[in-house]
Every structure is written in C-alpha cells, then in structure tokens.
Picture 1 (cartoon, rainbow, N blue to C red):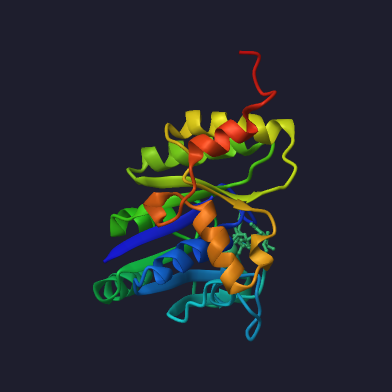
Picture 2: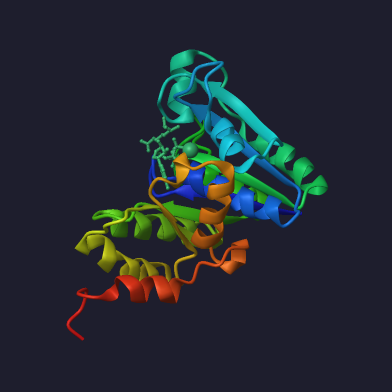
Length: 243
Ligand SMILES: Nc1ncnc2c1ncn2[C@@H]1O[C@H](COP(=O)(O)OP(=O)(O)OP(=O)(O)O)[C@@H](O)[C@H]1O
Ligand SMILES: C[C@H](N)[C@H](N)CCCCCC(=O)O
Ligand SMILES: [Mg+2]
C-alpha cells in the first residue's frame, strides 16, 4: 500500500533502470509490485517502451502504460504534435490509487525531469506526487553539471511540498573522473542526506539474476538493498580534498 514516484534531474539519467531495481528488490522480498508509466514518448506502437525494459530486467508483469506518443518530446508536446488527447494525470492518480489498494508497492516513472509538462495546463509528475501524497526518488547523473540540476530539482520539490525519498545515481562508471568523485559529497550536501543508491553503468544490460544482485548492491536498505553510502563515499574520497 505504498506509492513511490521516480523522477530524474533530466531525461536519460537512468530512471527506468532505477525503477526496475526498486521493483526487482520489492518483488524479491515477496511484495506485490505494479509499475505505472503515465506518459511514454519517443516510442512507436509495438516497440518496447520503459515498461518492457522493466519487465526484461526485473521480471515484473503488472505493468500499466497510460498514453503513448511516438515523438521523442515531453508528453505535452508529443500529444500536441500527434493531435491526440494529452495524458490526464488526474486519471492516472485515480488508477494508481486503485492499484495501490491491492498491491504492496506501486512505482510510477515520470517522463524526463520533475517539471516536464504532461498537458497544456502544465500538470507535472510533481503534481501527481503531491496529489497522491507519494514520496519521490530522484535519479541523477554522476558527472559535471549534476550539482545544479539536482539542487534545482530538490528546491522545486520543497517549493511544492513534495517529499523526497532519496537521491540515486543512475549510472556510475568503472573509472569515475574527479568531478564525479567530488560530486558524491556535494550531492549529499545539497540534498541533506546520504545517497540512497548508485547503479553501476551497464546494469541495464544485465540478465535478471545479475540485475537483482546489482539492484541489491546498488540501493540502500530503505529500498531493500545493501548499499552503504558511507563506504561508497570513503571508497571514492581519495584525492578529492586536501584535509
Ligand atoms: N545503469 C545503467 N546501465 C546501463 N545503461 C544505463 C544505465 N542507466 C541508464 N542507462 C542507459 O541510458 C539511457 C537512458 O536511461 P533511461 O532510459 O533509464 O533514462 P530515463 O531517465 O528513464 O529517461 P526517460 O526520460 O526517457 O524515461 C538508456 O539507453 C539506458 O539503457
Ligand atoms: C523522449 C524522452 N526519452 C522522454 N521520454 C521525454 C523527455 C522529455 C524532456 C523534456 C525536457 O525537459 O525538455
Ligand atoms: Mg525511462
């Protein structure tokens, strides 16, 4: 009976991989899990979208896609271009409430970042989270530029009364550069909390058994994993400060 919304600091940051990891861990501990994607853009009818990626990685079959538009645009712009009705996030809220009444966890993946518009009135995934009273997992890039994007996202959430559930780095490379290693500490300062997870680069290409191990190692105990922010920070600290 809980709903978690997954947003990102941008599109292409690894929201789908993190949503799959959250779903895989919940399912592995025996919870009933549904995943909702209210607006899927950039994918044609018959092509695999984010939910099919989640099915492939996490083995989840309780999947609910709202509207789909082929152009790789925000849901509002994609609907406008297609001439079809936009996503009605208020209808998604009703559907998510119904799903949540019968499941232990409902995950909702947005489209792009927090303030991407779903319709001409300007409804966003932040509105959906607020209407549902759901906490939001924010997925961020590890590299230079992420500090500003992450600060803006958290500030916008605070401004709207949306509760953060944690910050997860969507794709951490094998050889992080200096900016990435410095960003660990600074992301934690900006968000005023330890990192809630770090998914390794390439985890989206794993088979389901390997992906479950990566999800467990990559997400914190709050999400059923074993990720320890302190150990991760220590591991990458060397050379990031003179003290
Ligand atoms: N940890 C990862 N391992 C492997 N590939 C990744 C990882 N994170 C992201 N990617 C790849 O980066 C691309 C963008 O990731 P993803 O589709 O998860 O982004 P997104 O934040 O869900 O974007 P959207 O706004 O389109 O939903 C994808 O091609 C995905 O396969
Ligand atoms: C097409 C892409 N993969 C996403 N589905 C939609 C991203 C919308 C981003 C809009 C924006 O922030 O400019
Ligand atoms: Mg996605």
